[in-house]
Length: 202
Image: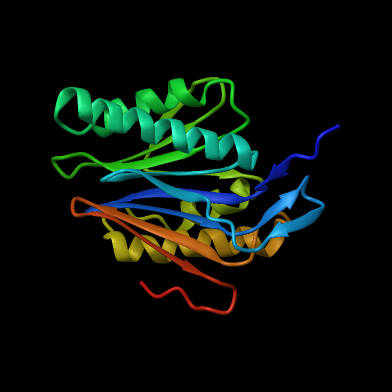
């Protein structure tokens, strides 16, 4: 039987008045039993104003990201303009179907509208103001429900996302080793990584 490298993981995505924040821990494990990496990047840009998180198998997540980027590039080449977030999430839902991955997608439309989606391997799509995935999702959702404010800006949302990842990392053995934070605004995607000893500065 082949060993599957899994992220275990906690990932979150939330909207703000001026953009979207995605965040994830940095631990990758072998079946949740052994920490294979303390430096995994589980948030990946796929568009000038959109990114996805990875949870599930690392191979499935990486394949999903590569295929979605290729589809977005092909769309722009053929049509002469970039994909809308709405078109991107429909493509993402078709791309992830049947894969061992449960990504979150966040992006900002050309008019500045922030959008966040939960996707599953059956091709399902759920849009919400905030969501989470991975083995620590129940812990993260509890924090998001307590702290989320629909009137907050991106920098305040970074603090909320970081608190959600921290809460999950305290109790979920498959999550930890720092955080990747991705801010998405009408100006583009900005990504930062922090280890366990670094305070996340909004």
